Length: 222
Image (tube, one colour):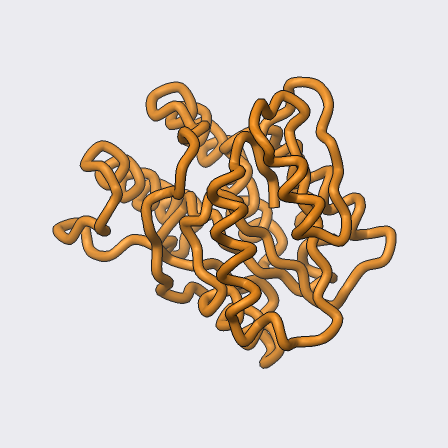
């Protein structure tokens, strides 16, 4: 989980995890990569939550944080790796559904927040609703497979798959790069509808126009 100024989201996730059936599973390990520029209690809360907390120096974004987390995970890799935003917008029941899919043979699984183009997910702004659907359509054309939610922040990978994909994006174009790398490698994708809620506290880090263009560029060139 990459995190910057996410004390409220992480607090909620920790509370919900302790009450979830997932908490009763053995051999779970959490890696949180905390942006050194965080100004709240994200680091302190992460230490109560994660087995490994990494402080991300410099100006790297989400993609860079995920790369750092994968590098740490690769020192003692597990069979399954889950990538999840720390803002509290995803729920543990859906994480468990992704794990089940991977345990039953899937290589890569992603959660789908979006519904139809005519049905906006509660809590998602009209701008993000339209932008997410537009990017998903363009990515589907580019990758020659239907991509239902290009920018989902909940993913699951088998170890061999994430090692093959080896993402290099530094920012919010991370997910677009993953889809493109999967196409190039011929990896199948399982897409599971999930719950999604508005972030809990803090401010969204993504910049609608600037990052939208960056994501589109990544879709085209990957």
